[in-house]
Each structure stands twice: as C-alpha cells, then as structure tokens.
Amino acid sequence: MNTQMWLTGLSLAVVLAFVPAHAGVLDSHCTPAKAAKSAAAKATVGVGGRCDAKETLKDTADDAIDLDLDADDAKDTLEDVRDKADDAHDTLDDAVHDRGDRDD
Image 1 (cartoon, one colour):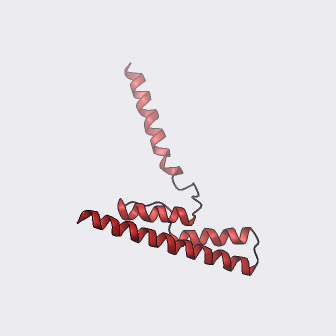
Image 2: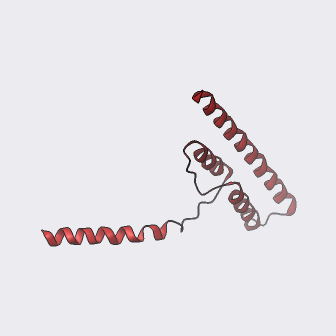
Image 3: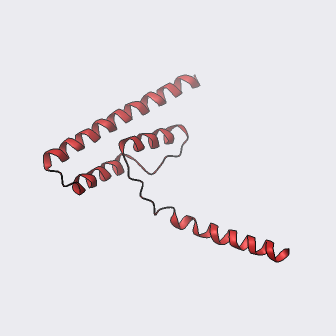
C-alpha cells in the first residue's frame, strides 16, 4: 500500500512538472474579438488573456502576408482591424463606466 501511494505521488509530481512546459506552445491566433475579451477581463478581474491590440495587429498583418493580399486589400484589412479595435475600446470604456456606476 505504501509503495502504491509513493508511485502515485511520484507520477503526479512528474506530470505536474511537465505541464508548464507546454503553456507557451499554443499559438492563440489573436482576433479583435479575442483582444476585446482579454481587455475586458483584465479590466474587470485583473487578469487578461494573451491577446492585446499589438498582438492582434501582428497576427492580422501576418494573415495579410500569408494570403498574399495586394497593398490596397492589406490597407483595407488594417483599417478594418483599427475600426474593430476602436469599437472594442469603446465597449470596454462603456463596461468600465457601467461598472463604476454600480459601485457608486
């Protein structure tokens, strides 16, 4: 019985030791929606996700290059992302403002 408990504990320790090694491996392809959710979570809970405006713009630019868009299409895509980021920022401001109204 004692050996079984020791092996179970050792197995658990080995598994837990390697879990953090995979934490950064996943690529969370950032979109404006993910960036907005991350910002809202950061504002309300204090902990956000991996996506922010900078990462979203980078991923969108990478997508534009991957899709081999011409310059006009890439410019339109960037303008769309900026518009969505502005909308997300406005939504976040509204949420923070509404939260402030509830605290009063």
